[in-house]
Length: 79
Image (tube, rainbow, N blue to C red; front, side):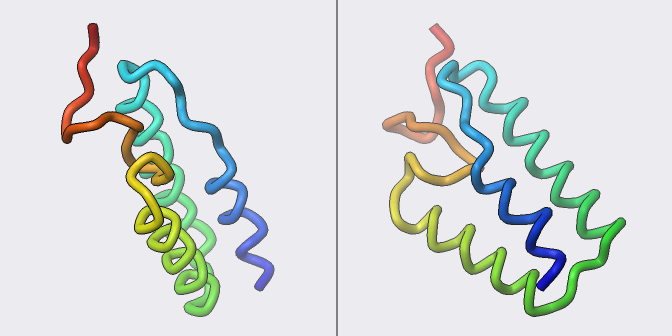
């Protein structure tokens, strides 16, 4: 479970309040996770625990997910 030490802090990175920066935030998170999985190759149990945690956080509410913002619809207004 050593590999979870680098995965769990990703869930604690705060989302930007400005909707214009949300795309940059999502790109950073996705690229970090891809790089982490390619470089460190975490064990299956750690990967499943992390994916389960992300899916439970995203399922609990739209505003809670690390991959999209707090907008009402599918697209945020940048104005």
